Image (cartoon, rainbow, N blue to C red; front, side, top):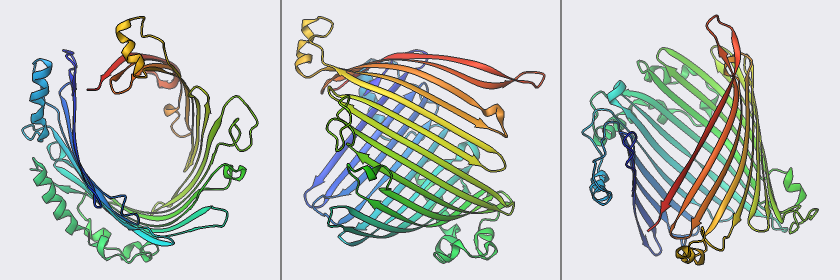
Length: 467
């Protein structure tokens, strides 16, 4: 439990959880989280069940999440301990406020994964209710599954090939009078009867058939929003290690072909797309402890390269969108628990115009184990518990360009430092400071566009106490 006494922006946070386990079966986790900022109260409840590790081949698990937001909750002006007790009433949802936003989602997963052939299937449902603001409730339903074939070579490399098929339906339905979760569940149940195309469409063939043959247009007539998206795909996975070829031979490759029927009021579109992604990961190559030691400046490394290409064609306007995304993540680990992380991203989009996004981040982290804390002997017991200071230096650079909308161009550079005193099982104190510079176009009164320079500074101190 945590709360502040800021008169302008009071805040409070509370978390409760209970986990039940039974040998041979699995575990059940019950959670409740509450966060208050000013007068906005967010409540969340969770239920998660997992199968036991003793059931090696079988996978049967799932989770349920419910969320409730109100905007007129006033934190009582009481002392800390009284507030801690009073906050237990928030274990139950607040239903006495008009300005509320509720949402929920549920997932069930079933699988059987022996070698060499197994399968898994996922069923998901979710909704978001905004009855107070627009009298609507948006619902989703997803079904996805497929087999998995695994084998291992004589060299110890493991391969897995997983074909996949799935379909998703979503829609916006009238819900003017909902005030609690029971009302939301009723609307969701009714919405499942409004999507006949989800149950009757022929798998695989639906990706090719004429859109006029779908039930989608007729079944969704009158709705402000509806979507149906079937997809097929195949994923290839390979175990990676400390070989040079791991830098460029994919350890993960996936190909997805999908189709999306979309309604927005009276507008209907049909979009067909393909996405290909490749990822290569290599561990412990060039450091002093690596498979190919070329330097003594660090001990080990981790390198990940990822490329993704997608193309989508939308009818009836015959619009085509292509996108290329390239990512690299590199980690260097040195003695003394020092780490240097380098992340980069390059993304291009080509539709009727060209846009690009470039981002990079460097982060250096190291630890200090002090002999004393501020020279105060009373804190010596904390040193004996293993207290240390984690320091972080970071630099982030990002650029965004858009040929059609140059007013959205943006260039930013942010420098940051953080020092965090961590005391095992007792808490932490964090101090941070960030300084950012930016440049973006700005339209003046006569319609001309000029570049403006932005400057931002943020800093703070935080403390966490564990008991």
